Structure formats: structure tokens, C-alpha cells
Length: 121
Image 1 (cartoon, one colour):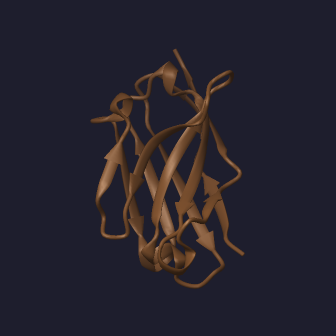
Image 2 (image 1 turned 90 degrees about the vertical axis):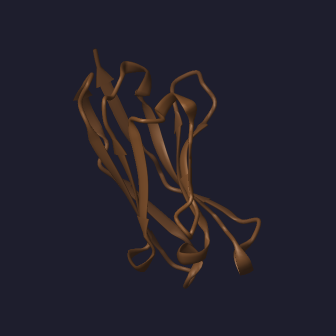
């Protein structure tokens, strides 16, 4: 059973920074071979991609966060981070950690419980 636990959310002023962490557990080596990422959902909106990172370190970002956010991972620690700088009020949302299974876990999709990020203007 895969579990993802996020931390690092909170309240920050516009222009500030936050660093989100997500630690995975369970199901052996799924994390080291799978795509990990962050999505977010604001009230009344659909969940949207923020950033993803492959097992080899290739990254992809939403246009709205390029140049401000940075995703990274440590396969040995089953951990993915999202460094968020120059935060804007429109970044306010619940942020969810995601693992897209590969190899034996191909087609499986796992989510964390979410962490609230609130940016005050």
C-alpha cells in the first residue's frame, strides 16, 4: 500500500516562499522508478498540474509557475519537494503530491491528502 504524506504548507505573504515536502512509503521501489509531482486545486477549480519530475530528473512545469517554482526529488528517501518562490495570491490552493506508477505499477496513480497553501496579498 502506497502512502504519501505532504508537509510544508501554510500562510505566507505575496512575494514570499514556501517549501513543500512529500514522503512516500510502502510498495518497495515504486518511488525510485515512477514519476512524482505536485498538483493543486483552488476552490471552484479543477485540480491542475503544477510540476512533475521523472525518475531520471526530467521536469515539467505549468506555465503559471515557470521561473518561480522548482521541483526536486531524492529517490533514496522516497521524497519529492516543491520550492515555491515569489508566491502570488493566485497560488492559493490545496497542493497534492502525486505518484504515477511505472514498471510493475504502470497505470496506478497515488495521491497524498493535500496541504493548504494560502498567499495573502
